[in-house]
Image (tube, rainbow, N blue to C red; front, side, top):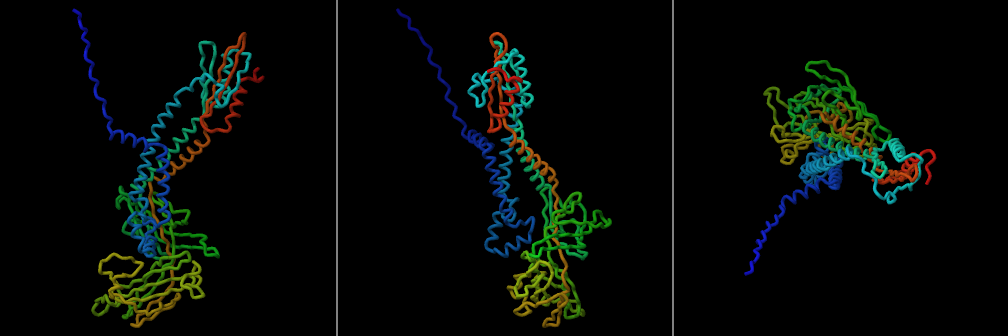
Length: 536
């Protein structure tokens, strides 16, 4: 009876694990995000996204220009507002590009930094077997000394050119010398990218802990201002800054001088102010210009613009006089300016001490520093060579007690539309020169006393500006290192010659495009062969 061999049943193989698609998607997305190509694309997108911030007026810098844009483009301005065109650098889409670029740089730079450290700690690789296949090659030449001395001479020639060098002895009596150079290129690349990270972080912290405010100052008035949110015409505080954190100082404008070229182009702007830096402290004079801001301990004061403030004196029906100095905002480069002067507290009966809102007075005006002799409606020169003021008078309820928000540079259009405020000056505005007056139909009088210059100053605090500047400087240094550095390697193989002496063969490999590598290779090989150049 034949025994039948019983073979064990084959073991069932475990089923193959299905890959986690979500994990694979996240991994591939991270690799794509942290690639250098993606970082360059995001940097390009960030530059494109910043263009609207230079083309469109920004509310954080010049709110009056935003108001003018609304007046010039009433249909387009609301759409621009919805997409963040007047606050580009605080818009969600700009922040998304910013954060993606930051993440991409972090994920790209840190692995490269570790690889660079490992490369710096590693020794140059040994010489390849076939040196004649390298882009640069020197055929074997004879030297009279033994291979050890020849290897030493080759190593000294390479070190003289600042190559990292490694000498190796092999069992067959031959020697190899390996050398490489040009790690400054990758060091410069890393410097540049870390500097870019520093700039991005600095800009972010500057937004968090910085603040700014804009204010109009009129020359020769006591209407200076102190560094308080309530005293700014427009202000913005970082998310980590409270109004109580603002440092104390006060400013008032004592003199402003502007000069122009004969063509009307601006030549110079100089502002003189008085500064107080402590409560009840002394006022000290200071001077600053457009390109030389007033630098304080925790903030800088910049000169943004200037114009003319019209001084009007109104005499009501009871003989009571009120004088106002009203800044008129320029609407072109030749300072054709528009403004509004409101007198809500006039025509109060001295017997009853009651005010009739229907007797409030407002004036819309256009000021021309130099009137066009041909009768044009715009100024022909920015300086006050022949100043003229055109006024249109309105009487009625100005709407100041209604509580609706409005601009101090325009009358309430709602009051005009519903007839609460009516024009009383006829069809043509009244032309006034400095010193002239205009008596209206009810016996009241308005006098044009003249103008005073005003300036728009921007007070800004950015605690991270020094870090952003440092990052920019380091980035420039890194860029120069990256452009000037070239990775390359050289090898020497020294073999013993029959009898005595040695044979020296060399090869070189540039890791990047380097037109001067051939000459450098020739110099090193010539120095390694000795004064007589060796014998081929």
